[in-house]
Amino acid sequence: MRGISKEEAKQALRTAALSRRNSLIAAEAERLSRAIQARAIEFAGYYARRSVVLYSAIQNEVRTDAILAHALKDGKKVFYPRIAADRSAGFFQVLAVADLHVGRFGVLEPPGTKRLSKTEYPELTIFVPGVAFDACGNRLGRGQGWYDRLLRQMGALPTSVALAYEFQIVDTLPTDPWDQKVQYVITESRVIDCAAVAAGVGSQSLDGRGCCH
Image (cartoon, rainbow, N blue to C red; front, side, top):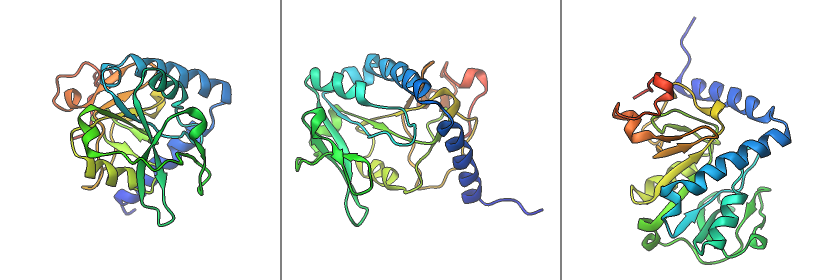
């Protein structure tokens, strides 16, 4: 029997992870999302920053509404992604919860014209969605690739954080050269410092199971 390709392996993992996530009942997804967001709000990599990029949750993804409310109250600049007709994407500022509206792809988007500037990067935390992650920060995304492109363009200055249910953390993920890692993963149980885990000095290395390099 022939081995499966990396893309086939990714798709199999994505299908399994989505099935597990979509099986969550609404009340459980809400409970876990609240716990994860509470942990994120206390995380120094968010709390000390003056700007934040959030995402609009779809298909039982971890929600970001509590972080949005906190960030606006705290006076942070808040940005959300907006996808153009040609499927290019950028981040645009949101000044109030009511600013978000349903975009062309059925996802809540910002209507404004103030785009995220490079000058924001040193004081920016970007929260990144995903389907599955490992403790080294490898990420299996929604499958369209534009978060990888944006993260690559932004470089190392912004702090990148994934929000995930604990069951979305896997031992290893197949990766391609263009895949972009996140620096931290926050679940309902822990905050994973991915660089520390990759270096073999982190205490959050999947409870001692290590991770793929």
